[in-house]
Amino acid sequence: MNILLMMLIALVIYVTFDTVWVGVIATNFYKSKLGHVISSKIKLIPALIFYVVFIYGLVFFVIEPAISEDVIIGRLISLSATYGLVTYGAFNLLSKSTIKDWPTVITFLNILGGVIMSIIVSVGTYWIYGLIIG
Image (cartoon, rainbow, N blue to C red; front, side):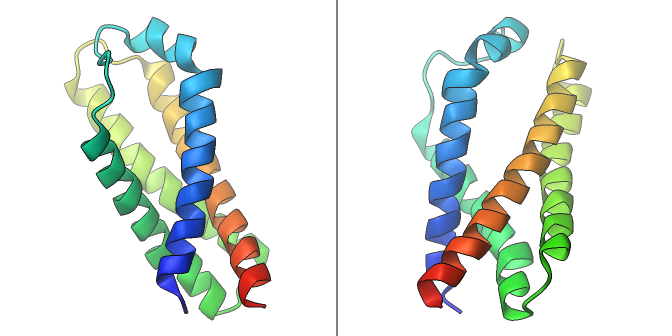
């Protein structure tokens, strides 16, 4: 198994969808709900570290085992959704409990988004990796 290839594929898919979601579709919504805590400038290093850590976990715990065990797509979706729920849930529920005025709607939207994003990235990586490797 080529873990680095899986990570690269997953990273491209994740960054593409995340950029469209946060940078285009939901920008005004996030600003209206979190404008008081959003930085005016993205800190690139922590963002890159997040992307690498999140993608590594997704590949390590979900995508690579799914490919090596040749799981059915339903199992891949289930594992992906669970990973998204746990990772995004942990951050957003902790944020809700510790950050003053953290909106409940953001908590739920981000957790749902994490579940969906994990599924998209996992299924996309599984499919593209299969096309490349044959």
